[in-house]
Image 1 (cartoon, helix red, strand yellow):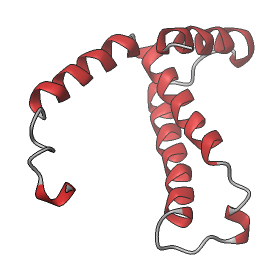
Image 2 (cartoon, rainbow, N blue to C red):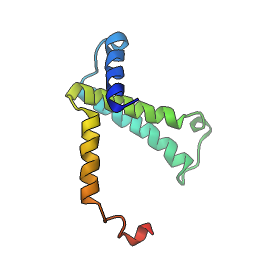
Image 3 (cartoon, rainbow, N blue to C red):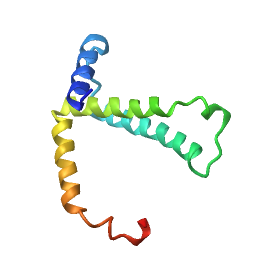
Length: 108
């Protein structure tokens, strides 16, 4: 599935099941909440924090998908083409950072 197809599928789901998009501020708050849930799993599973029993049932890929879902909702309702935005962002990073990381002694 491409980003464009994902944007179309989310839009169709909203129109079929979701009634309408939540407003942009609500979706921004929801995105923050979902990123927090993802951060909790990563911090406990891969970081120094110990994992609680209740955290073990949390699904990393589902939380990543939740983040992507809300991000796609925000893109749809603000008119952002994620395919084009990502392409431009990758091009920007490639030009700006073409040797930055290669010359970073901390990464070797």
